[in-house]
Length: 97
Image 1 (cartoon, one colour):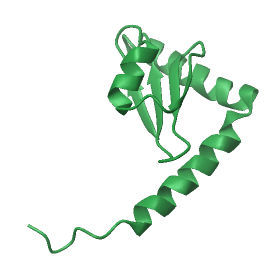
Image 2: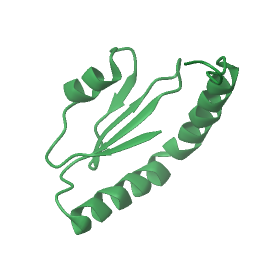
Image 3: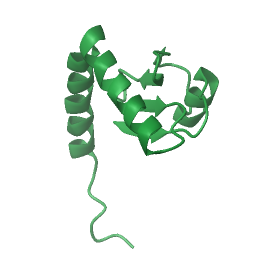
């Protein structure tokens, strides 16, 4: 999972642009934008309005509150385990220049 603190607001289009393809679940809860791809198991969290330590802390807390309230925490963990399995199956780059 990637957590990205944004100095200003963030839009769904910006999130999809960073992901690189539109076939993902995109949610705009109060903290910013949450993107989850159930195929590649990529998860992106965009925290909006992180202008200083206090506002960043507040955005993170809102994200965790949303995870618990929405029930998404279970799905987030499932996707993370899936992503770990994908990465483990990738060929090792050790020994390559």
